[in-house]
Image 1 (cartoon, rainbow, N blue to C red):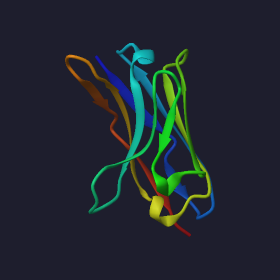
Image 2: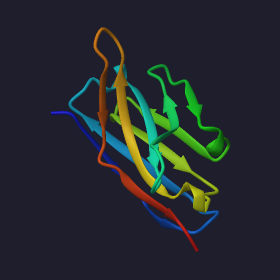
Image 3: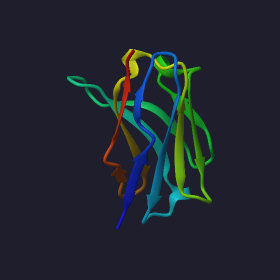
Image 4: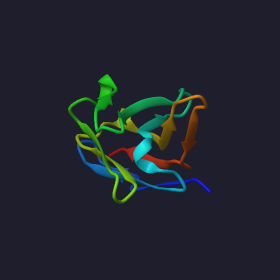
Length: 118
């Protein structure tokens, strides 16, 4: 059974930091591209950051320079370090694992709430 379990969300003041973690089981983690997405109320889910199997990263323009994605293939985890948080970063953050091939396999976590407010 595939499981992606996010943790680390919470309430933080503007300018603060949070570190999200996603623990993955049930797949060969190192063969999956990992991503963090977010969905704010009334908005579509959007990609925040992604990391390939080789460690290459990409970020949404809105978080470049503030967020850092990393993966640990030995621990089957992917992390998102979020600094200089803004109220507009408030959303539910989801972890995603995807492997493309003849059949694309994509898995999602249940999400973790991040609220940036004073």
